[in-house]
Length: 151
Image (cartoon, rainbow, N blue to C red; front, side):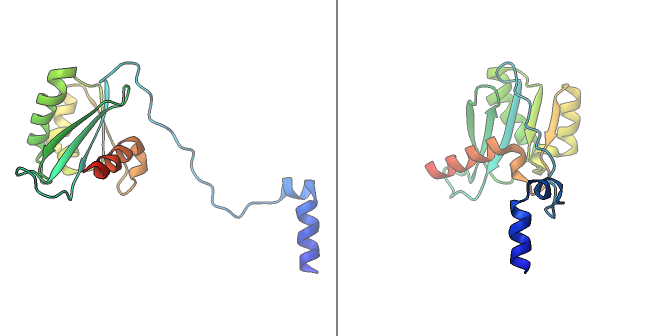
């Protein structure tokens, strides 16, 4: 009898429209805004657990969210906030100007008090992804996977 009831309900249009769902509702995704010009919005992350090469064991990945251009800078996994500032100065700011938005994960070099204050002084908006949720910046995570394949 249970099977007959399930079959009847499955075939009843009104039943299908009015039945309640027992599935959890997920929040709507909000994609990051698409910039209107190059190097105004960048994403940054680190690829770690790499074999030592010339004294480096990590790569800093900087991506322009407009053109998808990538800058890879060899560094060490324990990169400090000041080291991050030097890399930004030498490899991003000097070549492409000051970004308006920096998207990163919650690595200490990216969200330290020092960096938060520096971004405030330079009028740069800082967007940090949610902890343990790399999908927040899927573009950067995808690039990281591609870089690891090539290495």
